[in-house]
Amino acid sequence: MNPEKQSTYKIASPEGESPGGTEPASESASEPASESSLKAKDGLAAGVPIIMGYVPVAIAFGVLSRNVGISLLHTQLFSLVVFAGASQFMAINLIALGTGMGQIILTTLLMNFRHFLMSASLSQRLGPQPKTRIPLLAFGVTDEVFSVAMTRRESLSPSFVLVLEVMAYLSWNSGTFLGYWLGDILPAMVQASLGIALYALFVAILLPEMRRSRQVLVLALGAGLLHTLLEKADLLPGGWNLVAVIVLVSWLGTYWPENRTKSDSQKKAGESRVAE
Amino acid sequence: MWLNEPNRLLLLLAGMLLATYLPRLAPFFMMRDLRLAPRLKRFLELIPFTALGALILPGVLTSVPGHPLAMAAGIGVAAVWAWYKGGIVVPVVGAIAVTYGVLLIAG
Image 1 (cartoon, each protein chain N blue to C red):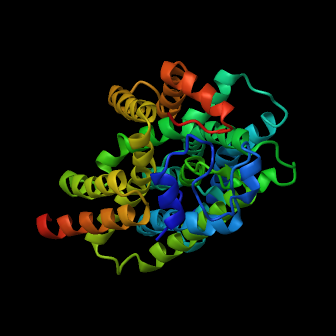
Image 2 (image 1 turned 45 degrees about the horizontal axis):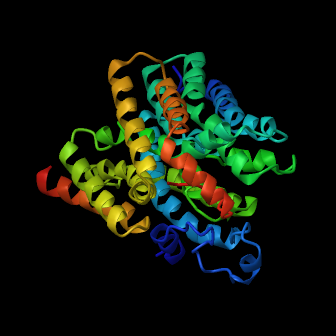
């Protein structure tokens, strides 16, 4: 299990002192602005849930790709090169329908534009990075890595994020291989139940945050409902509904009055992250 | 038409690589030397939560195609556990197990 994660979830820290408790507190005791920072080894523990969420879905991808008739090499290349779950599923489905290349690539771009927002958010949190490090760090930004990293209260180090990314990449690719290879053996019912894994991961990341902060509760629920409505209305193409919802609701959230006073006081207390 | 044209698939992969990588890459360079206004900073801090909300809904509703009951049971168990106990591994494994269980019984 994951005791560090548990403790950071349980204890809100209005004092600005990180509750994680694995690092000795001596360093941060004198300097209130510094929190314990998440390092590479913390990434190993934090990455386990990503593996659990990814492998089942990657297996499902491998199975689908095989059923459509794509070779193992090309299937694996999808996961190695594209590394974007939803887009890969979409591409395989469109390939099966005989859709043209331009449309598949454009849809991919639309579906993944949300990562533009996520990279912006993550890079702001990490601070300026050396230019040589950016290409690798940016390649691994996925919904899951982003969510797991950004909901931590401690300060993030690039190595922590990178470890998460490598674990995500390896599990996504080994799952793809496994799925392609297992394809026939896996009972249909097992396959059908794998689709829930990523959503369970998202729910498990989000709900403790919603419980802790009414602002997060309202904004996340609002985003989900608005996205549902927009998808029903079917106005915008591809992933634009998702992008529009994230931008609109996050921006509305900056007008949340309660948080502004709290964020001021928390900033004074040296807490760089604000949840309430 | 795609399947007997491996080279065309490779071209597609290259295009998809660009389409997924560039949106991930650009902000790191664009925001490198930027000092953001407090409201914009706050906006970026809220993105994880709104993104998660919008990633879950409505996608989860069709995550077990044709079996909304199994989906509801699986995600329900994950949600209740995450809300009261926290943690991630138990909700994920629990959701898969419960979904599979309901499929076995009802399917």
